[in-house]
Length: 481
Image 1 (tube, rainbow, N blue to C red):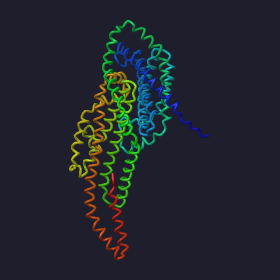
Image 2: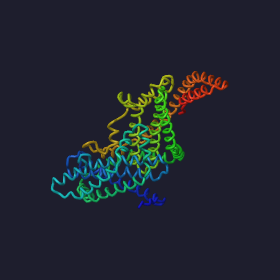
Image 3: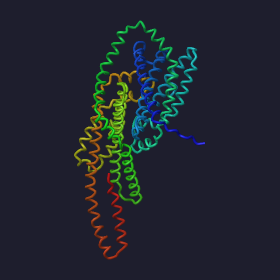
Image 4: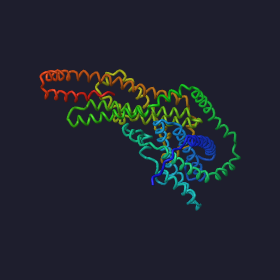
């Protein structure tokens, strides 16, 4: 018997959003305390020490919960198709990294190491084994291909297909529910140990801890003031809503254009007619599609920043921005010679009109400047919860607290401006290409039209049909982008 799907009403959705906000606030508070304790008693290296392992388990679980709940409330708050799909991607990526952090790929996750330590000491590890099994079950539900695309981007045509498959937000709500249950199991295990640690740290000079907190708070105050200023600008909300309103329709429109180019290329191939011009046009559409994904992802991140409840949550949004920037520009332009040879931009440069289009050099100069500052260490830190045996949670937390939000906002502005300039450039390049093709086609088509007119007057139907066929073939080159 087919299950009847029950759509959540507005009240239920609002409760879920409210619960997500509370979970974020509670998790951030506990994560803050945990990181301060780690500073006092740990060297931030995973060396098998029981207390270190327990604290790494707790902090990793907390950060993962903060990230997925932030995306959950944004996904549920929006009715926009592109926005929902963006946050489904981010939930999938965070959960994948969370499961790798806890479980590991080769039995080297924090949980697995903790279980191994307990077994060596002949202590009971059954409770943690049950947690690890739940983590593995959740990890099996993560979409690895989607995770790779979110972290690294992909060919625009492939990105479209993967995003198109994201239609059921209930899947992600249920997965977050599973993650929260696992997190509760971790909290239940850690809580008595954490209490014992706190009691054991009573002798530590609280002035040092307050000083550490104060250093964070100075940047917090500056960042909060900037966020407050942005939140008071209603026109910014209106502008973002307007920018994202038709995002998926725009993507669909460009994808149809891409498919049209593909079909025409196949047709010309089958007729052994030169199709190089259509390949050039397809590259233009491909770049336009890639830039649109980048632009709309940046707008989603900015929207999340405006809706964030804390500086930590805002910093997470900026971490997403840097990942989007490096992933998108790697495909568009590349960050080294090898990548540039395989980039979309390198294909654009083969178009004859490239050199005669004034904006070409300006766009390439901007792309080169942006990609020359890529920091792979920073990018990896913002993507992975762990890299082999290196655990990134503490570093991510400290980066989030020390992040200069005004600087990050200027970077978003620069990237969105780049997207706008590239769109203008592509339109300019296409205009030059159309002028060239019109001139070529007129030189060919005018004699054919004259022959058709003479044949029509003399009732030479075979010649009329042949002329029509030739005219229809050449009309294939008049695809409008």
